[in-house]
Amino acid sequence: ARCLQVCYCGAECQKAAWKLHKKECVPPKPVDDVWELVYAAAISGNWKGVLEWESRMENLMENQTEDACLEVFEFFGQAHSLAFSSTADKDHALKSAKIEERRGNLLSKLGRFEDHGAALCTVGDTYFRVLGKLQDATRYYQTALDLAATHSLPSVECQACTGLAKIAIKDGRDEDGVEKLHTALAAASLVKDNVCFPALGVLQALTHILLKTDALDEVEPLVLHYRAEATTESEGGVSYWVVDSLLVSARLHEALGRPEDAEGELSALLDLMRANRKDVQSLAAACRELLRQASVDLKTLDPEVGSQELIKAVAAELAKLRMRSC
Image (cartoon, rainbow, N blue to C red):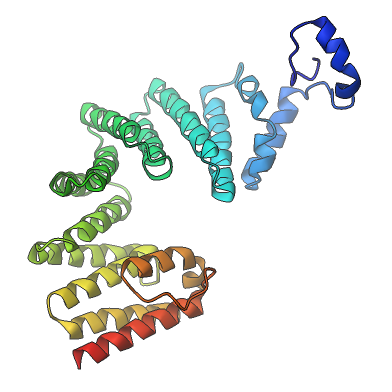
């Protein structure tokens, strides 16, 4: 059909369907007009507006520069990611991963190997965390790791090893997971730019898994390192990393029989949360999950928990800890 949205097996079928189809059979907009509509929707976060034109994605990339094609991939991939966040439809997550893989292949063609490695890890993350396909995730992480070895890319090595470690831990291969995390941590120390971010992700995974073992003496210097990196990253405020590092530190002190030090960490967290209520509100969902993982009692909290409720939960946990140490 002239709208380029419907196909028919022949002229007779097309004529038979015309009475129903003619009201919506509108000639397609020129590519430049579609590009403007997609761009406007993408920068405003309107994923529905972007996906409305998904059938024209290939058309948008015809006779375009590589940079423009990368932008098209980014727009539609991000739109599917937002759609998944809004609908929990895993089909959107899969489409986002497929588009990111194509974007990565183009980045490789352009010689942007570090960006290609990051794209591979992003695809691996989607297959692991969202789709639960560990074999596929392993393949993407391993490809990224091989790329990192070939081109000496510590940031990609860090991301790939962290992903492989999480898969190993999920499979019950804790020793392999810890070994991979130590490799990731060493790679993170070689990243010249934005050192905190890769190191924090690795430190979080490493401290959480080691806290489940009896190697508490080995964990302590890592927790101190994690705490320092998180404080640097947040510039003295509240962030996801700060909340987690303080909770981890408190758990470690309690496990080592140092209740006063554990109280000090929770007290410091409570003071930070009270002083930065807006930041806590914006991190409410993530903070709630961290507190749940740290076995803080959240039974009385509503699912849509806010900063005040989170502060109360930490205060209650601190009070329980003080009672246990008396």
